[in-house]
Length: 200
Image (cartoon, rainbow, N blue to C red; front, side, top):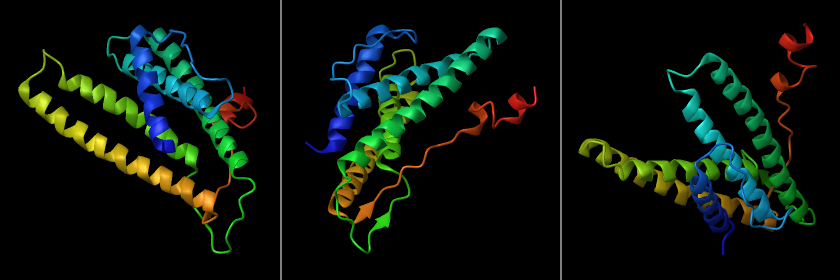
């Protein structure tokens, strides 16, 4: 099985698991061995699923301002967790391919494997929720048709992104490309780097 297919199967299963609860405070049951790549992929998509629904909640025009601020803080924390997990996944690939002999003409990709996988995880959520829109009984026919067209585009996008990820991993494994791991260094989360925080 290709790596992207493993990702897509885990992401789809994780999203289904979230919707068994449909609750942003639900505690997941990660079925994979801790430390395995499968465990990391499940954890990554669970974070994305929770954040997807937090983003829905905060856009409620009737939301209480105190609640909106609490949700915003939670989204900020979730973004940091997401970034950390992407870096863990890239660490897995760095370790996996550490002994590969890099060819003299090898090049870098525009993003690391894990950041591409991050996009694949978000895409799985888009596909799930767009598919739900096509099943609504309270929506107009034009809405359903429009969502079906969007769903087809998203499915094609997933095919293309999946293929690109597998090709990138093949290139890294063969030494045709190499990867570097740059920490994100989000300055606004660091009290020593955000002037609003360090000037208080």
